[in-house]
Structures are given as structure tokens and as C-alpha cells.
Length: 84
Image (cartoon, rainbow, N blue to C red; front, top):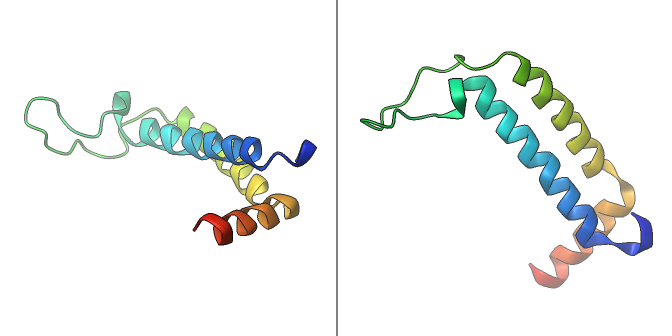
């Protein structure tokens, strides 16, 4: 965390997490759509792009590394105590 920028570090963590969840959605469902648009029924799982599994894995590991950062963890706990 350069220049004591907790907000920037937390935004970076958020985008890594979002990259993971979006990649998983496209890995699980063809076109990333979980529900059929006509009747809103659940589409079958594991019909998506298998390459997205690899993408999700990359995002997941980067996200976990960001969460492990000692300075980030300290700043996050401090923020939680102050703001809930």
C-alpha cells in the first residue's frame, strides 16, 4: 500500500473479487446468464466456457494475496472498528 492509500487498496481488492465472481459466472453458465429470460427458470450449470475457470483461478489467487497483505489487513481492521 503506497502512500497509506487504504481506499485504493480496497478498491483493487474489490475488482479482483468481482473478476473472480464474473469469471465463475461465465464458467458456470453459457453466456453468463443464470436464468432463462423467457420463464426465469434456472439454466443447467457447467455449460459455460471452460477457459473462464482458469481466469477465475487467476483472479482468486490475486484476490487472496491482496487480502493477506499485512498493512491492508491492519488498515481494514482499523476501518471496521471506526465505521462498522
